[in-house]
Amino acid sequence: MNVIFDTSTDWLALQGSQCANCRGNKFDSAASATSVSFSGGKSERKYNDVVVQGTEWLDTVCLNRSTCIESFEFYLISQSDNILAK
Image 1 (cartoon, rainbow, N blue to C red):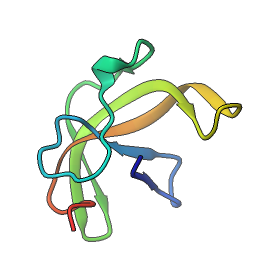
Image 2 (image 1 turned 90 degrees about the horizontal axis):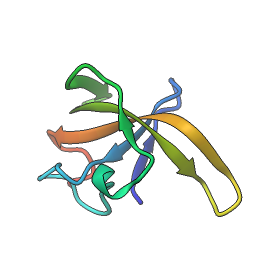
Image 3 (image 1 turned 180 degrees about the vertical axis):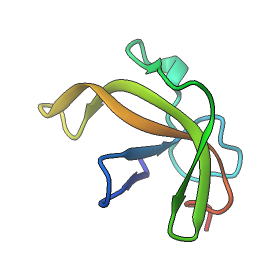
Image 4 (image 1 turned 30 degrees about the vertical axis):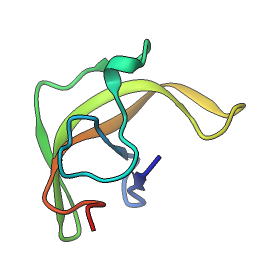
């Protein structure tokens, strides 16, 4: 899955299934039995010259089969000006 590791913060950003102009694998929160939205609505994040809109979520995130973190906070991208679309 394409992800953004924001090394200046503790955020993980994933392209959401609703992101029409994102390319590559997308996360479908409806397909996860453990995903929970906890944001009050859409917010905007900037990564250098890239601007994305999305919401904050909690879910179990696994780096491999044995390394998983429950209730991990991440940012689900629903719209982007140019992220991973190139």
